[in-house]
Amino acid sequence: MAMKDEVIVAVDVGTTKVVAIIAEENGGVLEIGGVGTAASSGIKNGAVINMESTVDSIRKAVHEAELMAGRTVDRVVVSISGNQIRGFNSHGQVAVPHREVREEDVRRVIEAAQATKIPEDRQLIHTLPQGYIVDSNDVKNHRPVGMAGVRMEAKVHIVTCAKSSADNLMTCCNRNNLSVGGLVFAGLAASESVLTEDEKELGVAVADIGSGTTDIVIWHGNAVIHTASIPLAGELITNDVAQCLRTPRREAEKIKVTHGCAFRCQVDDAEEIEVAGMGGRAPVKHKRQFLCDIIEPRVEEIMWGIHEQLELSGFMDLLSAGLVITGGTANLPGIADLAEANLNMPVRVGQPNTARFGGLVDIVRGPAFSGVLGLVSWCSGNMVLPSGQKRVVEKKKSGGLLGMLSGWAKTAYGQN
Ligand SMILES: Nc1ncnc2c1ncn2[C@@H]1O[C@H](COP(=O)(O)OP(=O)(O)OP(=O)(O)O)[C@@H](O)[C@H]1O
Ligand SMILES: [Mg+2]
Image (cartoon, rainbow, N blue to C red):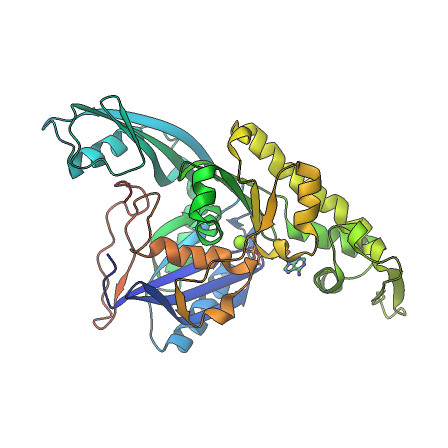
């Protein structure tokens, strides 16, 4: 249950932007008190490549959020993504000594399931329970505490990241005097924000298509069964536009966002766009369809990259609810239609679900904010956390922090 006076500080560190949200949980409503956004240039493919610049972006975003919220914060939960993310399924088994499942048995069986050899250069970030079997009863992912039995099994999905990437991200926060209460896979956070409970139950894939990375998560039976990340996203489209229209990247980005469309057949033959020339040359007019000719193949490549991951997962047949795309690139008109035409499955654009949010929620509307809003939801005690992770909270009046919950990002306690 949510307690009053708890503050959640979520920081989404992306390739183009860092967003910080300070939210307070009150009676089940997540009141957003502060939002800060800063341009990001120190991240490539989810990893920090420029410490100074990332430290700076985090500082600006958090400071702006602090000013808006009228408070200072010193503990954050941060997103992590990129193709250094790895996910795999595992299971564990324990005896139930008291013939009735207790809280500690659930803890032990999850520990048994995550007792798999993780290389030294990898860091465990999530152990997400998928389901429990007590004796021969498959109780799915309902909490088994109180059930009679002598033996219990747990199936889990484990997510790891490169240790160096996690360390670098945490160092960037620490240099701003911010301790990191937890790391959350960005794709998982986005999926929390855009999916309905029915989709999670039926089977669905989410692709958070940002600028540098596309993070993929598959849900089925109300559990995460696959996670992946590929280095194909919006900045490739911008680069293509810049090259083909012979215009600077900044201008290409503007043209893509203002006039871009992923599906050529949705653009009128008569429409024209004006492109600024380089080096003082006169602007040039092009058909808007020409712009689509540049964008469409690259979007198709991104879609086929997602499709390849879904095939590799082995869970393609379970995706009855299709694919939900979100992230900034999901703003591109026609992208869901093009994806449907290519992938032969239902595709929709996932807007973040803001029903539980109050306060300054209007500042963070649109698919580019599903990640950071999902991070806040993830930390909130009211929601069913697939990983059973505990909240990272800051006590309001004392300014003091609850001690870092031991193994916050690692230990799972089951759902419901
Ligand atoms: N209307 C639009 N049309 C096309 N692309 C858009 C539009 N709006 C935003 N984008 C693209 O979305 C991308 C940014 O998305 P987002 O903010 O989700 O990325 P990020 O979180 O910073 O990066 P990443 O998640 O890849 O690390 C940019 O490539 C931008 O060009
Ligand atoms: Mg992102």
